[in-house]
Image 1 (cartoon, rainbow, N blue to C red):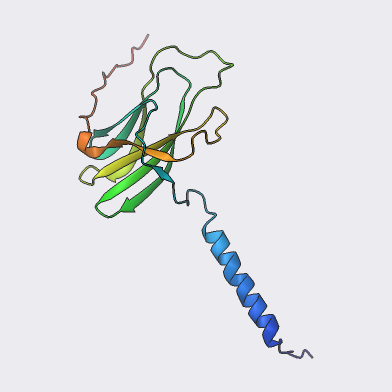
Image 2 (image 1 turned 180 degrees about the vertical axis):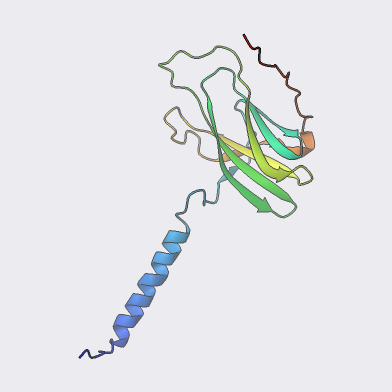
Length: 156
């Protein structure tokens, strides 16, 4: 037969403090869960703008090919939604296309919501180069969606 042994009050306090600390630590460590640092300086990287369709689309046009664009986080603020993106340039030891290449990020945000896009540039290894995000585009300056030519496949 088993017997229940009551724990000492000090043990309960330590266990409760440890449980609370671990819950707080786990809450802040989820993917995409961080409070981005914003810079008051203007964005000085590749061209970034917003296009309006049923949802907002973020367009980035680096000067050469090989750039990677990542959507880091979407945060709702009072009166607007803020989107944070990271840009990674190509490794300088590789040859890339020497012409601008447009890249698009489709968002789930409807075009009747005010949108601000913050961007930061990382180094080619993906490490922060100049850490904080800078305001790169606003929905007030949005362009109409670009029309793409539809090419029908040929059956040969």
